[in-house]
Length: 254
Image 1 (cartoon, helix red, strand yellow):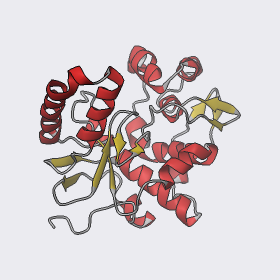
Image 2 (tube, one colour):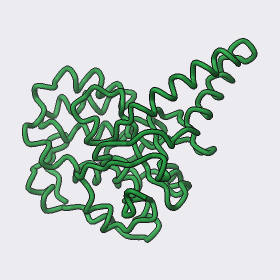
Image 3 (spheres, helix red, strand yellow):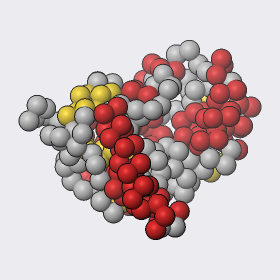
Image 4 (cartoon, helix red, strand yellow):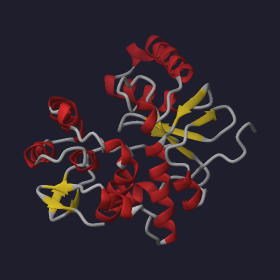
């Protein structure tokens, strides 16, 4: 195996935390990668509703109900209370990022990249603490798999910060999708066809190489391991305190 020290859901919390910010090269044919992109992705019967964009996992933080972890995370990018209110009031994390963050992108804190990894770890852990369904989702994932957010087609500058790209896999899946549509399209309802494509394309995960830091995948695996062990993630609270993060005018203390 080309990467005998790969990080998975079986890795220790310390190993996973130490890997944050490090680029990975995961040879798909040699490693048990479980990748996810859309909230509807199904891998071996499990819906991979793991991304920050996934709805259905509201939680409380700071006396406020957050529809998604994406919205709380985005609020950390801004110091302006009105922008934060706009972000939180959106019906989904996607809408908050697509319409509100895009509108105010010039007002993103210049120092945000210096603390975004620890902030993301903190935010995802708040979702774990505040939503039983999300905890159950993480704990339903098998031991030994590598969680990877697949960001091949993402054009943003952080695509390989949070996930990994694997163009060879995506090209193969596109061809497989086309074949399924040709062979099955006229015999199935749209819903049944979409489900077939979902299951069969997500079953193919052993092609190409996943390249990127995969920090979301690592953070999810950290939180899962902490839930199993009944411990808190080793969040760098001193670093977050020094970042002077405010939410709705209130400075957070960690």
